Image 1: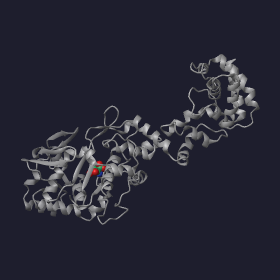
Image 2: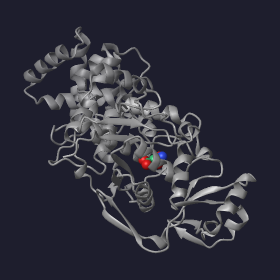
Image 3: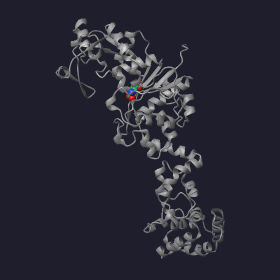
Length: 486
Ligand code: GLU
């Protein structure tokens, strides 16, 4: 067994919101490290200056913080492997130094071709994108020509030199050994004309120099990995364990995109999901424990997470399943925390003087997401005027419009005489009436609840509704029910 300390990294590019796929990579990296007592590092990959989005770095920090994926090292937490931002690393000259080392080994070369020449090259469609296949023109330049070009300040890039014969094999934990013919690989750019490294080069240099042992990323990087392997081999470095994760799709098996409306962590939180539920759900997008267990806290995930159990079949993002899970988290949530998040949704529909905490209590175990609340409780504010009278008819309770009218008329004076409007007292009073009459409880409660709510489904029974809306409103609603039924 190796004694190397596990070191993983989350290496986001600051290009916008935190996509669910990125959060999954971060989570798995975090879990792999923490499961083994290793270190989880944050590295900001900002070498593509054109894609940089203002504020995106803040989103990364905030999301890691909110989700509990605490990094041990990063731009804000030096662990001796910095700088942790690639644009800052570039300034140390590290990428150019290693690129030159490759040039000396014959594994890379300067390329001075201008735009026009590159545009005239043969193109090929790779993964839906048209790319030009570089023809190694500049590999043929003599040392003197290269020196002269450099001295004249001619713009250049540095390209990886991939031979036209042979093949390259690399290993992925999920996909096994993958072998690619060298002739099928392009001489990719390592250093761009603006001096920045490409992701393709920087990820290799950084993962190695930062002692990264496990790399988790989306499988869109799978096809480039043989090129990275060639770089590791050229340097004589050991490559990290690669885990390329399956695509996350929507319910229609299409790549989860912005259009789905729930492709980012921020969107999900905005839609009323609970952070812990989202993290729990994302953990299961490609990984499963030995048993069928589904609810995990982050600490439990750390304990259980074995990356050998990651699956390579596409992971379907099932919003209905997430909603169910979210409901479970809401049920288990501390009430005060729940109330804080529920309050704005309650206040959307309740303006009258009512015990909002009590209302919140009635829905806590019934909602899946917070936006479910308004529709469930709006009747506390007012009974819909034109509610369907057929709701008074209930086969099992043996009620209909006629029996309901009688019950409402009968109970009205009792409720007018009642002073204590707490749920228990009201229930005791009505139970007495039920007993005296020798009828079933539901026979009385059903019409009362209907008159009080105008709804077929409510989060509270008749007497609890009475307690919440109060005596005056209760009497008024029952009178209105009598009028409508008469
Ligand atoms: N910067 C890359 C991205 O955000 C990271 C890929 C990787 O983890 O190597 O997609």
